[in-house]
Image (cartoon, rainbow, N blue to C red; front, side):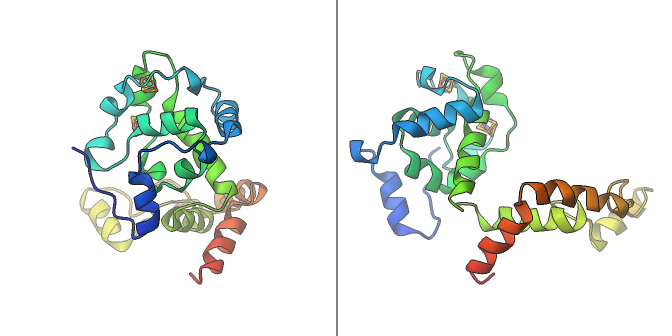
Amino acid sequence: MARVKDYGNAELEEKLRDTSYYTDDSNPQFLEDVKKISRTAANMCFQCGTCTGSCPSAPRSSYRIRLFMRKGVLGLEQEALNDPDLWLCTTCYSCTDRCPRDLAPTDVIMAMRNLAFKYDIVPRNFLKTVQLIYNTGHGVPNNDVNRAAREKLGLTRDPATTHSYPEYIPGIQKIMDFYKMKENADRILAEEGQ
Ligand code: SF4
Ligand code: SF4
């Protein structure tokens, strides 16, 4: 069932509802960039829809992987990168397993996310997750409720991760610093006063 988008941006939502194709909006280099980063021949997509039919996010949201494949082929860079649905892929790879053209739609989405990051188009909750991973080694750190539940189950209060071995956190930070992930997350959030 199609879901109505409601991202609090009327102008963007109107644009995404408009199914007309404006050649002025097309950037052929976008398809080339997506193909290069994803290492999949996205132009070979023949819009069969098997990917969307396999996607666990589709029944729960307005996200349609087939639509992103089409936008990639048409070079609709700004439409694809500014659509918040870009971030609803769980990277489960079901679509990639089932694509009859042997394409990797998952990797197309990952490529588009990489390109979006270059324009600072990243959902704020993702940036906050970057900060959490940097500081704790976890996107979702343990908390007292979980610790109590773990105890009840006879488990240690913290899992055998960076929660138990914080000495590994600097290694994680070193990798993230190399890619300037935390630096950029801090900058974008600060620019928005968050
Ligand atoms: S399953 Fe493959 S060929 Fe079919 S629409 Fe999706 S990406 Fe395109
Ligand atoms: S990898 Fe992403 S797009 Fe593909 S089926 Fe899973 S959630 Fe859907």
